[in-house]
Amino acid sequence: MEGIWLVSQLMLWTLVVVLAVVVVSLLRNVGLLATAVKQLQTGAQDTLTLEAGAPVSELPLTTLAGQATSLAAQRGAPAMLVFVSPDCGPCHDLLLALHQGTPVLPDLPPATQRVLMSLGDAAATQALLEEVPFRDGSVLLADSTAVKERWGIRATPTTVLLDAEGRYLRHKLGFSAPATGQASPERRRDAAVQA
Image (cartoon, rainbow, N blue to C red):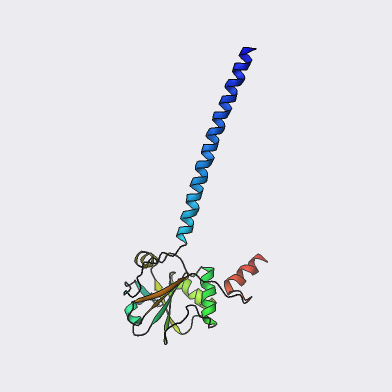
């Protein structure tokens, strides 16, 4: 009888140790999961590195026709730079809102020029403009790596306001469409595909 009691005690303690290892492993994985979620949330946060009142650094820019240009060519009037990615749903909503005259940044200075800064290639940007027109402004192609490294813009849409001398004033990260019940062409197309 003593042998059975000793074996059962040994099995019980083995089970306790195994359960302890499992619990520690689960707690460790929950910690790793929490860290991963925090990193994902940090990626969506505002990471702009521009300082208010300071001149912005130049970016490699080209026109849709492939000609090199610069931000200096935009100086002389305040500029609202609208950074978009052609495949970004909220970017489509933002462009549609601009097309409809919805203010994106409040209290714009008079005679503010609008500049669409596409992080896509010329063909994708042209397709975007055929879907959602961008009027009364310039369209430029920007190198996404340079935008990320020099200005800290890691998400689109991002709208940046510069003064007439090319100094940073303020910005807005993201875009939420006003509740009008009207979907962007991108969202209408997605709904048609799902139906």
